[in-house]
Amino acid sequence: MYEGVVQDLIDELGRLPGVGPKGAQRIAFHLLAADPTDVRRLAEALVEVTVKVKFCKTCFNVSSEDHCRICRDPRRDPSVLCLVEEYKDVVAIERTREFRGRYHVLGGAISPIDGIGPEQLHIRELMVRLADGAVTEVILATDPNLEGEATATYLTRMLKPLGLRVTRLASGLPVGGDLEYADEVTLGRAFAGRRSADD
Amino acid sequence: MHVAHLSLHDFRSYPTLELPLEPGVTAFVGRNGQGKTNLVEAIDYLSRLASHRVASDAPLVRHGADQAVVRAAVVRDGRTATLEVEINPGKANRARVNRAQLPRAREIVGLVRTVVFAPDDLALVKGDPTDRRAFLDDLLVLRTPRLAGVRSDYDRILRQRNTLLKTAGAARRGSSSQEGALSTLEVWNSHLVTVGAELLAARLQLAHDLRPYVAKAYAAVARGAGRDDADLVYRSSFDTPEPADGRPTPTAAELTEPFLARLEERLKDELVRGHSLVGPHRDELLLSLASAETRLPVKGYASHGESWSYALALRLASYDLLRDDGDDPILVLDDVFAELDSGRRDQLAELVAGAEQVLVTAAVAEDVPKALAGARFRVADGEVRDDA
Ligand SMILES: Nc1ncnc2c1ncn2[C@@H]1O[C@H](COP(=O)(O)OP(=O)(O)O)[C@@H](O)[C@H]1O
Ligand SMILES: [Mg+2]
Ligand SMILES: [Zn+2]
Image (cartoon, rainbow over all chains, first blue to last red; front, side, top):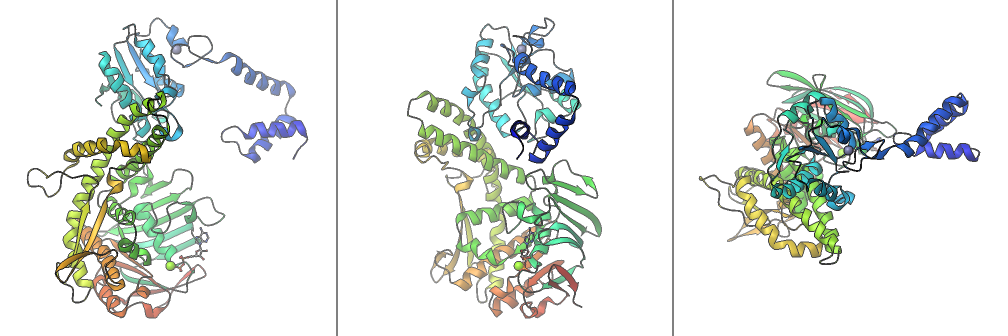
């Protein structure tokens, strides 16, 4: 155990993903020995994300303003909406440059084991968003694993009766995987070859 | 097929091991706890990415090490391939064939095929239905490696659905949280039925294919038994339909509708019990033996000797079925001869003697039947020495 504040720092660092107790100690000692202005810059960046990063009020993507860059961009097609589990998936899809519509971030996938049902996802907000009829196609880009498939099936059943075109990414994505890790070419192809979702 | 060379790194009790092997019979002899089973377990693991002894990977890695590697040179139709699995407990395992990494470790399953006889095999006959379902599923995956994915998807869907049933059952009737749970239940139902029907169709087909092999193997193992004495029937948790076009067993597509219908009938009970009551996880493989004028279940009725004969017959039948599918699996007889009386011991030895590769483990040399002459290794303190 170290003196109060140092131990506090080690404890906080140890809570970060991928940092064990040893690593936390190493980082703490590095920071203690580093140039104080560098450390202050890091501290400021940390504080800034908590203040400045927000979630888009429309699509729940990360944003520094009330509405994200994509929702504000008038060149994006307002008639096509892509549904993803997490904002990391938005980044992955943007990299493919295949998609010119807008997004809706669900905030996860249906998984009873993890206590996640439709109420825990941004589905109510989605329904509100679809109410004005501007969106005519919804692309289901949930992960190609069991929970992602279940979420897609659930959404298909909800959205089809609204008369929307509901599509699912073409197969070819590694099954059981994470959209986030699919390479650009594969993901781009899956977008281009999307087909009507049937439940 | 046969293994021509086995290399282990930090697998079980072995820091490193390089072991050249020959086709034919090889016996590993040594006192208990010396590492004989660990050797054959490594080959079994390479075949199925699962061990016949433990459900999780952690015990397979040598105590104190982070990772185990099992590598084998496998000869099939005169061509050698090097298969390798890196076991990383808690993280993704990696598999290589001829040094090229496979996209997913699971794709190595079935490239080596093993049939393992072990002292626990008596549980196939005397144990719970779970043991017999696992027997069928293990064999399914060796025959059709793609089904490994179907099997694990089914288990996961089942866990999700069971959790949902518990939540919905606990929520007060008519409350909004129960409605929410029920609205997603339909989704899990459709996934359970799609994947479950595929698993069930494959099991029904396998039980059908296996039946004559089991009867034949039982007659060969149990002296004085007739060709029709041993029989098996797959009993599903719902009434399966008559297959069309004269096929012996229904297809997955034919099974989905009755599966779903039965699921809907049982929903009330499921909510009360918080558990899925319909599907291949509730099925049973009924084993029976002819007795005087009637037919009796093996479990609860057969003698100890008959039960052993039946268990051996299930393994022998698996071996014969896999061989007729295409190539000779590797036979592993782990410490089984000590369990058998001399009659069954000699009978079994004679039946397996002709296999392309037979790996036998025994505590004492006398436990290895004469009919299984071949290479001998002595295993002591994690050393494997040629005992020629
Ligand atoms: N992960 C492990 N790390 C180190 N030793 C192990 C590990 N797993 C098993 N062992 C040791 O291996 C021995 C059992 O080997 P086994 O092959 O089952 O023996 P047998 O020769 O009786 O078949 C035991 O002594 C056990 O302590
Ligand atoms: Mg042993
Ligand atoms: Zn937005």
